[in-house]
Length: 611
Ligand SMILES: NC(=O)c1ccc[n+]([C@@H]2O[C@H](COP(=O)([O-])OP(=O)(O)OC[C@H]3O[C@@H](n4cnc5c(N)ncnc54)[C@H](OP(=O)(O)O)[C@@H]3O)[C@@H](O)[C@H]2O)c1
Image 1 (cartoon, rainbow, N blue to C red):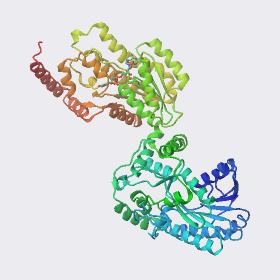
Image 2 (image 1 turned 90 degrees about the horizontal axis):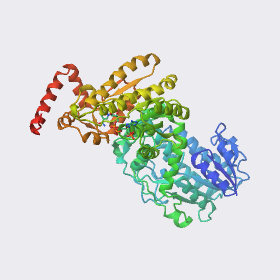
Image 3 (image 1 turned 90 degrees about the vertical axis):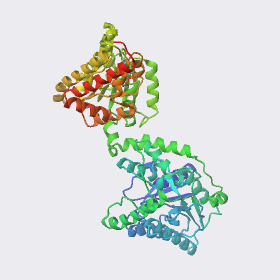
Image 4 (image 1 turned 180 degrees about the vertical axis):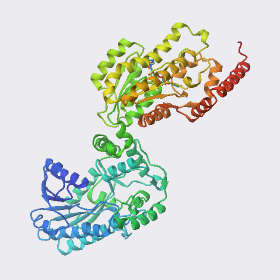
C-alpha cells in the first residue's frame, strides 16, 4: 500500500507512519518547510515538504497514493477562530481538492471534541448529535467532518472519520503540557479530578486506525477510539507529577472553570495572550468523556491491546529518559540539584537518609557514607526506587568517620571515582551515653567526641581541597542541645556545641572562597538515634527534651534542602525550638534555665528520684 500521512511529524502521525513502515507499506510524510523530519527519515519514511494552508504546495502530491491519513491540524485549546478555520477547515479542503483526481481512500482524524465538550459525553455513540459550543477547536472539527463527508460523497472518495479520545503516550501533549504546567505550578484539578480521563494509548489508536483503513465496512463511517481504562484525571495528573515531585493543588468546579475559561478567552485571546483557563480545558478535565466504542469493537474487531499499567510504564520511561533531561531548566528545584554530586555521612539512616531521598528526587548523584554495609545497601536500594532519571549515580562507602587515616584514603578514592562533591552533608553522629555525667567514663566521652566532632573534622578536612574549586557547600548537623544544654547530655551536648564553634570558625575561612557553610540545630527527630539514647537517658533529660517538640526526618530534610538552596548559615528546624531559642537569647538564657530547673525539680519529686 502507498500511504501518505499529513502531520507525520506530530505525535500520532509519527506513530502511525512508523507502524505503516513496520507493516511493509510505502509511506510518504508531509512536513512543513522548516519542520524537523530526522526521526521520520531514520524510520524510512519519504519526506515531502508542503503547507496545507497553501494549496499550490500540495499539487500532485497524492497522484500516486492509495490512502491518505490526514492528521495535520492545530492542537491547541485557545487561539483566534480564524486560525483554526484556516488550518482545520480550509487546510482539509485543500488536501481534499488535491486528492480529487486520484481519489485515494481518505482517513480523516477528527476528535471526540466534535461532540462538544460542554456536557458529559459518556455513552455517546458516533451517531449522537454534535453540539456547537463556541470553542474554536471543537467547532472547526465539526465543520471539517461535514466537509469531508460532503466532499467525499460528491467526488466518490471512500472516507473514514477517526474520533480519538485523549491520546496518551510517550511525548503526547497530555504528558508534556501537563508536566510543563505542574513545573510552572500550581495546577488545580477540575471537579476534584474525579472524572474519567477518557484516554486512548497511541499504539491502541494506531491499531484501530489501521483496522479501519483496511476494512471495507469502515468506508464512509465514523469511529470512536477510547481505551477501557478506569483512570481519573486526578490519578493521572498526580502520576505524572510524581516524576517531578509535584502534585495538583486544590480543585475548581466544572462550571466555575467553564465560565472563567470563557472570560479569560474573551479578554486575552485578542491580545494573543494564553488564557490561564479555557473552556476546552474545563470540558476535557471536568466532564466524563467516556464515549461509546461499541462500533469500533464490533465492526472492526478493535480492542485495547496495550493495558493501562504497560501504557503508564512506557510514559514513565519516556519522562525519565527524555522529558526530564531536556527540561531541567523548567523546574527550579530540579535545576538546582540535578546532577550535583552530594556526599552524605550518616546517609544510611535517619536525617541523612531522608535528606538523601529528597536530593535523589531532584536528580542529585548521591554517595552515602556510614559504617554498616548492610544498612548502606538497604538505603541505596530504597533510593534507587525514587531516582529522577535512570542514569543517576547512587553509591555507598563503608567508612568510620572517626578514623582519620581511613577517611583520608577513602575520600581520595571517592573524589577520583565520583568527582569532588558540590555538597557535603555531615550527618554521621551518635547519641550513646546520654546519662548522668558521673556514669560516663573517659572512653565513653571520647567515643562521642571522636565520632561527632572529629568525624566532621576528618571528612571535611579530607574533602575541602577538592571542594574548593567547585565552591562546594558544607552542611553540619549540630543539635538544639548545642543551643540550650540538656540534663544527661554532657557528652553529646559538648560534641554538638563544639560543632557550633567549628562551623562558626570554618565559615569565616570559607566565606572569602565563596564556599557556603550551613549548620543545623534540630530538636528531637524521630530516628533510630533516639532508641540508643533511650537506654540511658534520665527522666529529667526526657522531660526537658520534650519542651522542644518532636520532628519528622522528612521535614528536617526539607528544611536542610531549603537552607542549601538559600545558602543559609544558621538553621533551626521547627517553630517551637526557634521560639524557645528567641527567648533564650533575649533573656541571656535566664528564662530557659529557670523553667528547665523547675521542670527538673518537678520530675525528681514526681518520680521520687534520690539525689
Ligand atoms: N535524631 C535526633 O533527634 C537528632 C536531633 C538533633 C541532631 N541530630 C543529629 O543529626 C545527625 C543524624 O542523626 P540521626 O537521627 O539521623 O541518627 P541515626 O538515624 O542514628 O543515623 C546516624 C547515622 O550515622 C552513621 N554513623 C554513626 N557513627 C558513624 C561513624 N563512626 N562513621 C560513619 N558513620 C557513622 C550511622 O551509620 P552506622 O552506624 O552504620 O555507621 C547512621 O547512618 C546526627 O549528627 C545527630 O547528632 C539528631
